[in-house]
Image 1: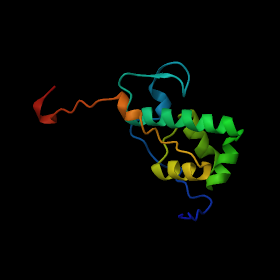
Image 2 (image 1 turned 90 degrees about the vertical axis):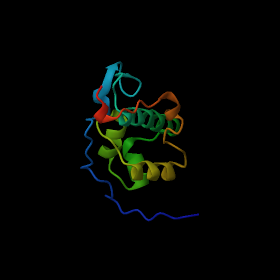
Image 3 (image 1 turned 180 degrees about the vertical axis):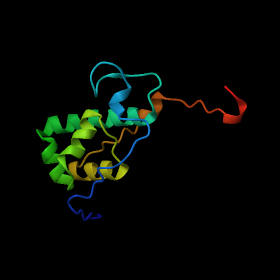
Length: 125
């Protein structure tokens, strides 16, 4: 078993997302159970699925955002941004959450709901 040494405050509060906050792509409903817009970027779908799963785990274990943040050496605002869709987290944070909670959070089956339409940008629309 690999042991991870985590220093409190490791998370980067300044992670930027060119697509805007995931919750800004809501077509109807309330995050994270809302229906996303048809043109919502992949990151919004991933963030939504991650938030749903994390909320479920937190509810099952009666954990607050502060308690989860303590488990991973993060801050509660970071966890709050994941939960409310106001920010995008990185894979490191997801991994540390999975290790701390002992459960998978990454939406491994999400890809089944999508297909790609790859077009040559030089070919025109």
